Image (cartoon, rainbow, N blue to C red; front, top):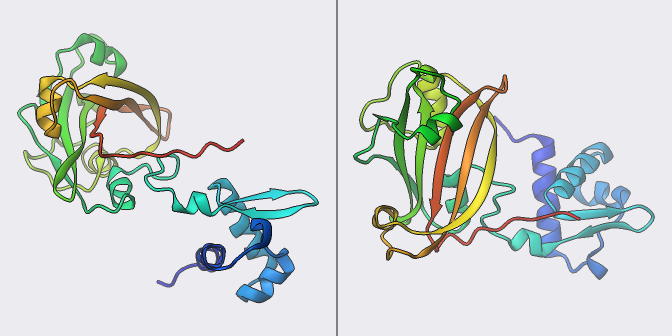
Length: 238
């Protein structure tokens, strides 16, 4: 299946920004872009709106549309990339994922985690360790917790999945539509240090994440630890 006109136009605009010496970083007017890129004005506007959401351009009424090459050079943008395999790939590494460990599929005993999962009396949850690698090196270690009632079928000991979203869809029959993330920082425990192949007490970026479904149902919860090699970036629009 061919690419959509919108996708082609968006990529053409990005290429235009990268390759042209724009005075004051200002793009030509829309009607001129229509002739340059050979597409409709409606498609140009749609592509410019998308690039504005991504922080690649800024439109100012009466002044025009301004391009931001610095944004295009940014890598590992967590505001744009949610899948960790894609995040690693965007950093220039070859990603891979392993669901593994001695805790694979074990029932959760920690009451604080069961509370985060909103498990009621007698309800159980299971833990799955996930290790993302970058060029074969440990990059992101995740502890994923899912209420047992959410599973349609329990996964085998070594399931082949590309990411957590794939795992949840495949074994829980659920679609994750958004996640809530709380950022933190802590020193690596001996256990986490072993997983990431770093020295204990190394300072790490961490986050806690709640996975939410289409009906605002809580699908799961995770604790995530980033190797210092992960130079994560985020764009904040003002």
